[in-house]
Length: 196
Image (cartoon, rainbow, N blue to C red; front, side, top):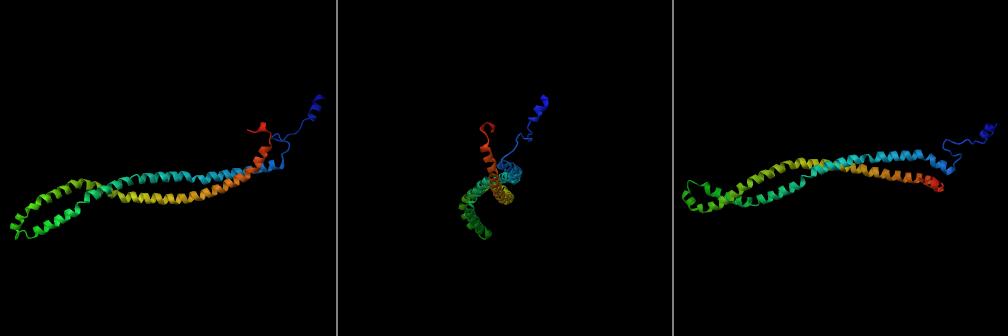
C-alpha cells in the first residue's frame, strides 16, 4: 500500500524535464532549425575564400619576377646609352671606307680617328654579355605578363564572387541576429545558476 500511494504522487515530466515552457521559449526553440540553416549558408558562402587565397598565392608567384624586369630594363638603358654615338661613328667610318680604292691616301691620313672608334667598339664588346642577359630576361617577359594577366582576371572574378558572398553573409548575419533575439530574451529570464 505504501508503494501505491508513492506512485500516485509522481509527476509526469517531459523528456527535457520541463513541464511547460513559455510561448517565447517555444518560439525560440522553433527557430533553432532556421538558425542551423543560416549557419550552413554562412559556411557555403565562405567556402570561396580558400580559392581566393590560392589565386592570390598564384599571382604572388607570377609577380615575383617583376622587380627583376625593372632591373633588366634599367641595365638596358645604361648599356645602350652609347649606341647613338657608336652608330654615328660607324656611319662616318662606312662613308670613309666606301671609296677605299680611290681614297687610300686620304684614309691613311684619317687613321687618327681609329683609336676613338676602337674604344667605342671595346665598349660595345664589353656590353654584349649584359645585353645577352637582358635579352634572356626580356624573352620571359610575355610569359610573366600573361600569367599575371590571367591571375588578375581570376582574382577579379573571385573578388566579384566574394562581394556577392559577403552581401549574402551580411543578410544571413542580420537574419541570424534577428532570430537569436527571442533566445536572448529567454536566456535573460532563466535563473543565474542555470546559465553556462
